Length: 157
Image (cartoon, rainbow, N blue to C red; front, side, top):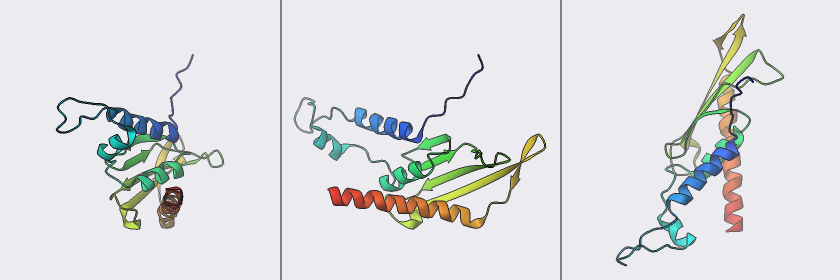
């Protein structure tokens, strides 16, 4: 039986990251209380470590790039690096994306995206030029989705 590579979905990785954060903070010692006591979820959320980056930009980046396999994901450092992705419509070219979230604020300059392209050349892949507007379009899609997530939170909060 041939080995098949496991490709975790973006939602799976985001869910696992959230689960790890919540598990790490399930019991928080009460300062000055002497003994450690379990606290409610709302109390734990107040002392839970933050992601280090804007959560709306983080979630929007994962959702925008969910069609690409992920190579590296660091929610504390704000780094998302995808593996190469070739569209079924154009199997002779493939793309890779690097997304860096640089701030905890929801701002356009808190996001940096780099897109790489390769084309099949005989038996291998060679680097190719990427349209300069491609990274900007990806960034705009992420920013638009981040704003939608923020508005949904504010309206429901």
